[in-house]
Image 1: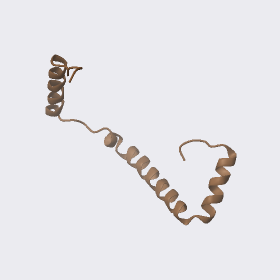
Image 2: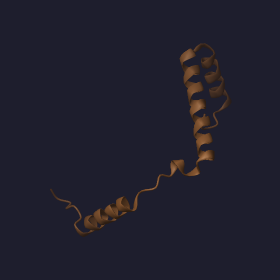
Image 3: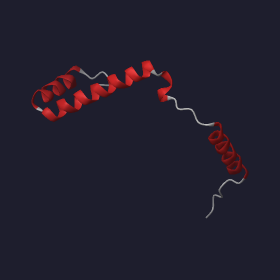
Image 4: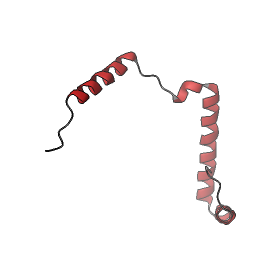
Length: 76
């Protein structure tokens, strides 16, 4: 669904989908999820870009500073 396949692979998949109910159901579920994700992204553009609280950002900065001051030794 994400990439363009050669014609013979597309044909093989379509033939498989004719007789495999489980794969048809899976394909329908994936189409539904893709459509829902697109709709959510249109309605709420920031839904997939969560914002970290300032406190969490500062905590991460502090830990990075400490890690740079005291890098792990390369010998056990």
